[in-house]
Image 1 (cartoon, rainbow, N blue to C red):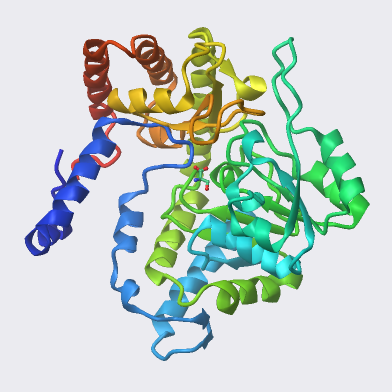
Image 2 (image 1 turned 90 degrees about the vertical axis):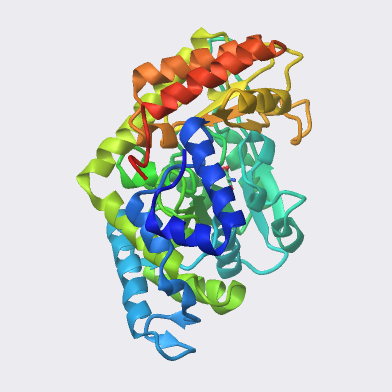
Amino acid sequence: MTIQTTEHAILAEQDPAIAQLVNQEFDRQMTTLQLIASENFVSEAVLAASGTVLTNKYSEGYPGRRYYGGNQVVDQVEDLARDRLKELFGAEHANVQPHAGANANLAAYMALLNPGDTVLAMKLDHGGHLTHGSPANVTSKVWRFVDYGLTRATDDGLGERIDFDMVRDRALAERPKLIVAGATAYSRIIDAKIFREIADEVGARLMFDAAHPAGLIAGGVHPSPVGIADVVTFTTHKTLRGPRGGAILCNADLAKKIDSAIFPGLQGGPLEHAIAAKAVAFQEALRPEFKVYSAKIVENAKAFADAMRQEGFRLVAGGTDNHIVLVDLQTFDAELTGKEAQEILDLAGITCNRNTIPDDPRSPFVTSGLRFGTPATTTTGMGIAEMATIAQLISRTLRHRSDAGTVAVIRAEVATLCTEFPPYGDR
Ligand code: DSN
């Protein structure tokens, strides 16, 4: 498939090599299934705002307090983005400048902590994030992270859950200055109120990393941590369906600290073209249709989880309440690693990512799990029937992984399915 827009024609004339690669990526996205839980398809309007002359402008500082001239228009863009975001989540203060979720998290730590302070966050292999204190990440070098995890799966099929007894015990023993709630591979609701109670008991601040459920929160299908946590950080490109980037929400009393942590603490000039695209996405998320979309993401995830279970896969946490389905491959095929499964599914045109499962015996590079998500397929208009089909395609691919002919047949079936649900119409 090729891109037919005027902008792409200009790119093709000026830089054929990059234009050709953009086209190849467009074709990949249009003809394969996008099941990475943290990806989505932005609207044409978000795409349009991303590629504007706003990229030319330096605007270090904040609206009304910039270090360069000529920011009269850009100030209005950033104000619109902040106002829409506050309205969307009912927040007192919004910062829309973080270039990424990692920056949003770093800024929150910088605003709330001194170097060496103790932070309690979820273990990476139980679903946490690199910036929640992974030994490989700068966060663990500046602050002292201790962790909590999930309960073990029980025989009655209930599945793993956040172990709040462990959260409380660790909090009482370690007296952290900050507790971090939020995860990248946890398929259940995360209740900020329980974390708040524990944080209050030990005199800790609470940060909620809502990168994954942000869109579900905006759409009203996941309880909001805003006003419960001291700071809420998130990315704008996952369930929220905006451009790549980050954002931070907090109460008015922390506004100055958060803003100073982003600039001048961590970043220089904000990416105002990205901020404009964020503003467009926030406007889209304010519309009633976004509530319908969010509910469908969860409905599809539940249908996909049921179908995967019927195909013989064990699901971490026993199922899903959100957009994520985390599969433990060990009972399906003890020999099959997450890495091998991801690679063979790629050949079949099914895009997902390998993921650790709780207490994974394999390394994070190999893993014993696969993470799937429904934000992107739901955007294309796929529904419950397609979720069942996709689960069957995954199961067939993995069962017949040594048969290149069967994988090629599945690849063709995937392409046919995708062309029935084009996210960009005639683009
Ligand atoms: N890379 C993101 C995800 O896939 O969940 C987290 O940063």
